[in-house]
Image (cartoon, rainbow, N blue to C red; front, side, top):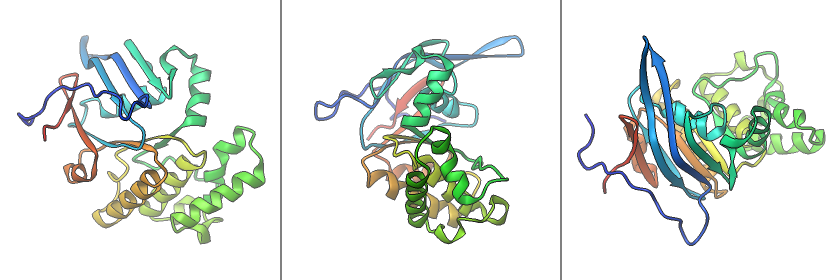
Length: 243
């Protein structure tokens, strides 16, 4: 049941700054059993620099879809998404991929580490593919692995790590290119409570401390009190929890 205190709001800019992410009339539909299901119905919203925003909603409500649209992994059926002033919905698939690689960090529920690569190689690979200097990339990766407590596991393969350790590697990989926008899709959903709390604390430390904007999709309402804003997807609308 949806909280009756929910209300649709469209935030204004903060301190005169342009929002880092803007949604303009965003619409996304899927066809299921010959019927159209609207996941996002003409959504307008803005996210600002340094915010931690939690996105709640039941399974299938469209949380992952929204993150995929913001990152450019998916394309909407209508409307636009602007990230850091770039209208990514108007870019080609290749250009969206390059933009995401350079400007957006993504942390997934199931880690998505490459099993044949070591911890260090998993963190450095995206930047090496971008043509960046290997020594510089490795130095940055080792600094992040130190921050997440896994510098001593640099040569270990993912199957030798616990779930919590794998997610910490995934966080280091997502931040290796110093993105201003970080998207996290159920980052603690595949972990037990203890590891989930550790990963969440680490993610907040590494994003808030650097002024990054963190948008997190989760089914866990216990995370909500830590956020600057809490949103809920319901019937295609993005609703903000009332104070």
